[in-house]
Image: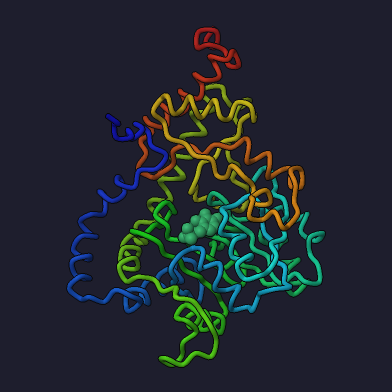
Length: 392
Ligand SMILES: *Cc1c(COP(=O)(O)O)cnc(C)c1O
């Protein structure tokens, strides 16, 4: 007899904890929505667009079916296609480069800065060619990429900048929020993101009114007015149910972000108190940024990464690898002709990083258990003095 998979006692993510806290707000709304039988786009989507735009300080927002489509729609609206190149990071979720490829354009990778895991602007100029049309910096794990130098180079070369802010709603950069740091910004409402729906969803913010209205047309098959199609678009509408849930959740987002940041601080204190700072590299929060910790990612020696993960799992502690294979080494991108060694900082990060449990409801006591398990792992290998030696 197979037993159902056990939930680890400290899961990497616990969406049920969040749901319990908002159930009383969500349930009546869902009943109301069912009575209305208004399921696609409509007033809730328009309301969400307005509220997320205001939250980011942006002028326009366009809801769509996923974070992936939120990356795809601006590129489509800019007419990016075969013969064009778009620059991005190889150390990101697949969608960032997948959308470039789907349009027949070529993803051109630029390696990351190993401290922030984000695109290294000092390598950008070398990657630009006469075919380059756009740059997609990714705010990985919830910390904004180094946008000022990226925007300066883009302005100089006449390139579009599309923020991949899927993991970074609310992230701060020099007093502004993700969503206004490029020409357009893509957000995801996938359930594991900081603002997650009850299914898929996405949204684009922009200051460009013309771009916003073009994307609103593209998300309904390029249709305007009804049944007239001047161009071919997608079916990428946001469900009213998702919008209604997200509007409720948006009211809690700042408190949840504060919870994530407090948990990150607890982890820092605990790792330091355990004497682990020489063995484990913690995430950096760069000056001028507000990190929103979609993930709390630590870095260890490559040969210890998988054994440490196994040890966490034995201790009933969830963890994840974001991401084990950098995009230039993905099989589907073999036609790009890359090989191991092309983007060494991304390859090293793929082999050395572990995401620890991170969600606003995670109790400090659980964070303590996580850090104790990491300390136990290093003690057993003789890499960390035992508690007694330490005290002596
Ligand atoms: C989640 C994510 C996406 C894609 O969002 P979906 O809503 O899953 O389509 C794109 N880029 C990054 C960096 C992501 O984390």
